[in-house]
Image (cartoon, rainbow over all chains, first blue to last red; front, side):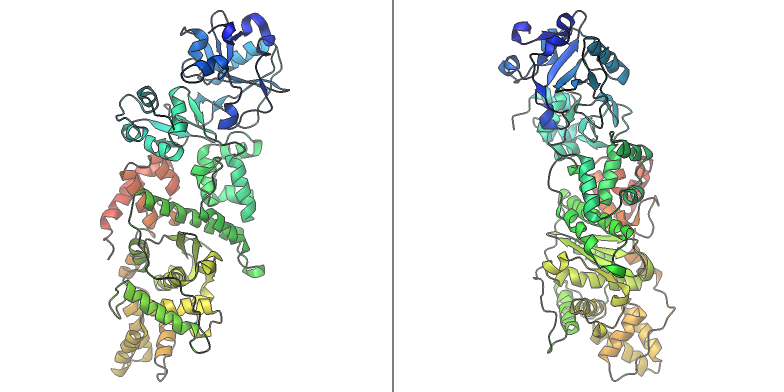
Length: 149
Length: 476
């Protein structure tokens, strides 16, 4: 997947990189809203690619959506997850990736700081209280929004 | 629904699972799944949350929700606009009880209490406890599905009585939990494909007239009931509890209510059950048998409309001579109860044979009590009505039922190992839980949740249930 397929790189373009992706009005808290305008991201060795999971490129694939491996070309990455642009608030992220996802709060917080350094206000969905190594796939409870660094 | 690929099935249920469909794979999967407030996931080592078997989680959420786990660590389960905590709070309002009262009664953890206050994630085990005590189906929390009939019925609890006859918050919550047990017991019976008993008669709307008093109608209905159940004419009913639970498949839930309450029949649509107070006069097994028979009279013969009103019966009414009760519905149920347990002709014969042999009237009543296992007031009123020509004394006080009849009626309710299992979850309910676990339909954790015990007591409970299963005779 390349930029012509709708992939944006945070490393090279900063917070302007995501301007082409849709914003949603509120945090996704249920199954249906989580599927709206969901972005996938990875933190690789040299780039931080983002893409709309079910954008035109994703819809052209057999499963109707991209996977994290489409962003990495199958290579290793430091971390990966999902994100939503929340109108008036910033970037809401989680560690939901079968292959690249963080397994603890500390690891995810490091990624949050990367996004804050890129100029975003960021909130993390965190991990499941009932399964602490499983990232939350939707927002649960009140979120804490952190300013850009 | 699209077809599940073998890659997806491997990823969700594990490589060791076998079969071509999610159902087949789920039955052979060694994986366990955690449900939390908002999502499900494959259980990781040391995950503290509420966990389910693979076939259990598939039954609850379906393949479309599970298949997400082939590519992601968690699959969201909540539906748009739905939230478990909102579902619970709506029911708290509907029942007219306080949140503090429910939290305390449901024994919610400190973590759960703090989370509810701070609006953060609540452990699912706590949400489930609250749901049970509010007669909600925890499996449906946050799914936007309509709650079962029993949940709607329990809302009517707040309308029972008024002024001094109104139910206290503790009583409303005890009955709401009983309604949950009744609903879950029906669900377990269906899951285990137990045959249901089809009562062949329609409800009877005859509550008496100037020509035929309601108590006479009750007696006739008792005769018809005995005949339908093929009870030997004049024979005592060996065990009311077993008759109701094992033969008629009627859930009987034992709860602790204020002493003045005897029992209640809970009915909503097809979900019905009987609630019996363990506290007060029902501590005597003779009285409890009469309460059960009285509720059976309501259960079998009252119209659906009347049952939906959910009347909670008080001992003061049940122990009166039926001819002195003004409410024809209760008069009919009372005369039904005593006639069902002690057919009047045979009760009169027992009394006459004792008195005619030179013994006292008191000894005659005692003989009736022991023959039919009914209490002194009931025996005395019944014989007096049947034999108006006799000077029938009040029933002798201080007599106790035999250990045999106590054992028959209280079997697996008065004693349970572990003792932490509340009385409301003992008896046939516990046996069905054990049966569902043995059939690999529910997880150890579901057993803990249903029996309201800590995880480390599940093994003890299952061993005990297994022992009582073996000791339970098949229904006759």
